[in-house]
Length: 140
Image (cartoon, rainbow, N blue to C red):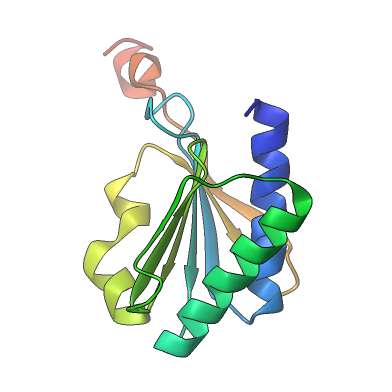
């Protein structure tokens, strides 16, 4: 998947999750930070049923739009569902799982955008590339 397709998929996933009333939507831009994927989309569902509904909406819509995912994990348990599109990985979590794992802090070098319930994005931080450390004169 190229950068344009990945960004388009991310925007679609955000909207599909919002359509199922997901909250606390965040997108981590991991390009340049992690070699295995470019984006994490993180969303909160407030019950196991809602986590499954958000997961199902995303997978159903992505199939209809021609976006192929390689796996879905945790959907049946409904506590933390993961959808892997290779370049985009979606995490749909109950609040207690999200608080426990703190993915947005774990990947603190990644760019972070937060989305309102209307789908408006707000950039919280930019990606920090390891060899561009501003406190070290651009060197690591």
